[in-house]
Image (cartoon, rainbow, N blue to C red):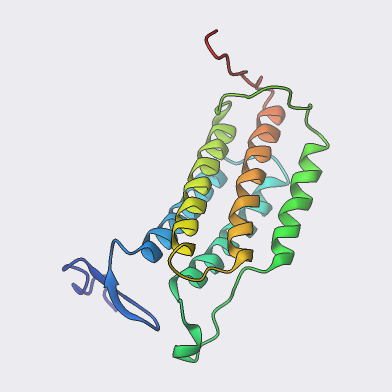
Amino acid sequence: MKVYTRKGDTGHTQLLSVGRVPKGHPRLDAYGDIDELNSVVGYVAAARPADPLPGWLLDIQNELFVLGSEVAVPNPEAINMPIPQVQADQVTVLEGRIDELEAELPRLTQFILPGGGEAGARLHLARTVCRRAERGLQKLAEVETVRPEAQAYLNRLSDLLFVMARFQNLRDSVTEQPWHSGR
């Protein structure tokens, strides 16, 4: 099978269950942002973060694949094919991981600048891409049905990525830089 088909050269692409749609469709933006987030999470993993983050990042990548599939196939019943979906218990797992890491972190009393060591800075980047993916999914939800579990997953994931960045920077002995308003 060839990687290219030439079918998208006119600015449209094929979606399972609904046919061809413009490449600027909110559904393509949403799952494209999720795909980008998955790549950035892989970029984070390449920086070899501290335990237990590598295993968690792999879980997140697999879950993002599930979420991307869910978003890419709007009517799975039309193709008689089971499409996996993000579940509420996966959101609960993210919350548990946030709590676990926060228990080791100093209390946050002010805004901090994104950055730090290599892995910490990459985690902050992943958090911002996650927030964009969340906004893209919300834009889709304004015109089509999106499951609340999908939206909750991205919302909680961005929180986890923020806490992971703080945890990684603590492990790397990198001091968090406070934000100064300039006043």
